[in-house]
Structure formats: structure tokens, C-alpha cells
Length: 316
Image 1: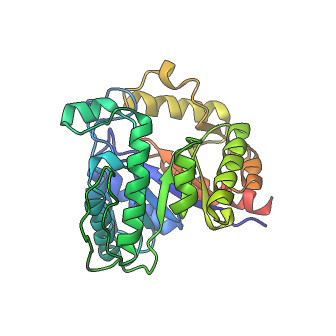
Image 2: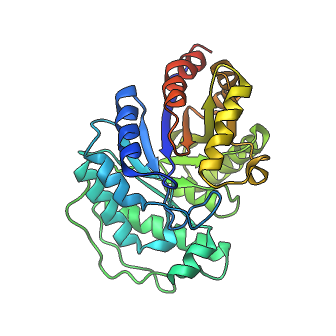
């Protein structure tokens, strides 16, 4: 039998605090493993200038109204903050939540929000991934209570940097999102406790093989990395009704259908259909699934994903 773990990312855009707070509490009650937030300054679906809330502040607020669910960014934009600040934010969240923080981080990709806010976007994706590797190494050491001094020639200039207090957790987990084969997956092999990505089955199978190669090269057992699959679920008694609900959500988020019609990460259907689709991913090693949920948050999907889909997958 499988013990499928489930998390939810409640979209930060096109929402308000009361709806978010009610949904966060309900996820906690239902037994979801973790609650995630985006780390964006502009909305990433539809109109970029529609309302969107900041991620770290939202997680800290969620910590105060939940009891057991774990909390993290999916994933933090490494470019937004000095790694020392990011490690301090994660540690603070860990104390506020009583040891429930996850430090999620990635290379960052949305150029307009960087340009508009005067944040250095670097010369290209390759450079940002070099920054990510350097940053994650430093954050891991900081979270573990070590002093950090930068190597010559790096992007960061740390000088005997150290932090107190340490996290509540003895080993605060780091989640890295991405699938770049030369750099991101190698950084994941070196440092990540959790890896998140999404895509078609064959695509994900290939990425796992690349990650395993990097793990072998750095002497890491890939089974020590928690593979997490990203989806966007809408569940109803028929696929047609699920599509109707999904389209209404996209309209609420000012997202034209032509922009998402070919996005294979939206999974609309019955509980049985979603369980059947998940089964081969579970066989690949994705025993954790994180569903991104648009506002207004779909209570029925949240209830049925953990109440119906999980039991079906667990029974195989």
C-alpha cells in the first residue's frame, strides 16, 4: 500500500484574507501535510497587475491560525533576498509555527516583476542558477548552525556570517523547485531534502534519471530526497462539471482560456480519474503531491482530494 502525502498551494492572487484563512484552517483539519504560498510580486496567471499577496507574510499569518500543517514557499525567488535574510525568515517562521517551516527556493523566472521593482535579474538563467547553488549551500550551513564565509569570486560576500537562534527543527528541510538538467538538478542532488516539479509522465521519468545521475556523481542516495509532484486539481462527479468549475476559476483569475488550454498540469475530473492518473507517478517515486488551487478556493476539491483520491491511490 502507498501512503500518499498531500499538500496544497493556495494561490496568492485574486483572493482576500478571510477566504485564505478559512481554507488554511480547513486544510489543517483535513490532515494535509503542508500549505504552500507563491513568492511573487505580480500575479503569474492572467493579468499580472491584479491583486496578489506576499508569500512569507502570508505563511507567518497562517502559522498563527493552524496547528499541525507544515508551511513553505513553492518556491522562494532566490533573487529577491540575500540568502542570510532568507535563512532568517525560515528560522523565524519555524519558531512562530512551532517547528513547521520548510525553506522552499528556486532560481526565479519572472523578469517583469524584477524589472519593475529594481531587483537584479542577472544576465540569464544560467547565472541565476549559479547564484542559487551558492545561496543554498550557504543557507544549509546557516540553518545547521555553522559560520559562513564566501569563497573568492562568488556572487555573495559573506564574512563569518552566523545566526541565532537556530531553527526549532534539528534539520529544517530545504525544498528546491526546478528541472534544469545541468545545474538545477545537480543543486538538488547536493542540497535538497525535497524536490518539486510537474509535467507529463515520460518527461518526469527522464528528469528522475538525470537527477539520479547527479546524485551518483555527488555521492548522494536519491531515496533521501522527497519527490513531490505538482498538479492543479479540480474534482467533481463528472469531467464536464470539473471543467466548468475550472473555467469559472480561470475567469475569476483574469486568465484567458487560450493561455491555459494546453497546460497539462490542470487535472480536471472525477476522483477515480485523478487516482488513475496519479498511479504511474506514484510508481515513479512521487509519493507526495502538491495541488495548486486558484481562488476562490474550491472547498469540494479540497475535501475530495484527500477524502477520496488519497484512499484510492493508497489502495492501489
